[in-house]
Length: 273
Image 1 (cartoon, rainbow, N blue to C red):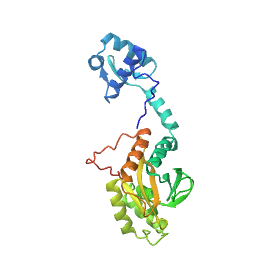
Image 2 (image 1 turned 45 degrees about the vertical axis):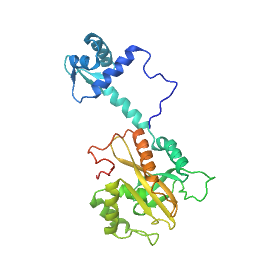
Image 3 (image 1 turned 180 degrees about the vertical axis):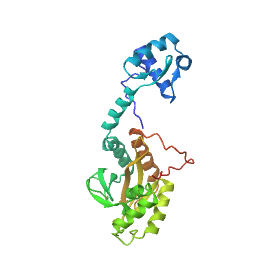
Image 4 (image 1 turned 90 degrees about the vertical axis):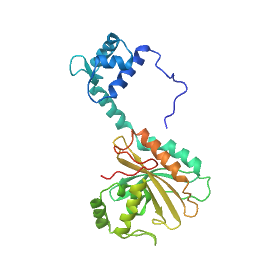
């Protein structure tokens, strides 16, 4: 969720900047070049005013002029966008929303990423003052098929990659609940793929259950998983909606704007690569 700084004005204090932002928004709304006449109509600016500002933006390479009288966004914006993207840290984007989710549910919240055939826990939000908790150590690792976040990553793989993973690892178990057979894992992944969320039902550790939702980047790629770990008898399915909302908030901060295909209302299924 975007938080506005109350000390900042809602509009630029310099009129030409406001007009410049309006022009850039109009150019961003179209993939092809737009004529000066259409730009003037969409922005309400006089053609001479729009032309003057667009000409200055062209000098700075923020706008391109492929043909006389037509304009489109320039490569300078791509260069700057790549700089911003490179500086975005998943952990930085996630920490404040994770802490807020922990405040609401009073259970540890974990951020983990895939590394080969395992997930690695990269951040956590918990309170030492809380009662019984399941706290995952930062830097800790676990097999993909035994964790809720790991199942999200496997669900995002195509069937051939899942089978290759099963063959490589042998699907070793940790508890009596562990999934160690490929057909069972495939059914579990199908459910995760459909719902967009995954569960660990005491599969990594007896007495511990987890639920996870995906974190996506600006290319709609699954880059991390956000999970809640709790004693098996205390995990509340009602937390799922809060977990998904928090994962979406983090994804939005990373530039995620939704999947290319549309989903029925109320679903958030995983795309398969």
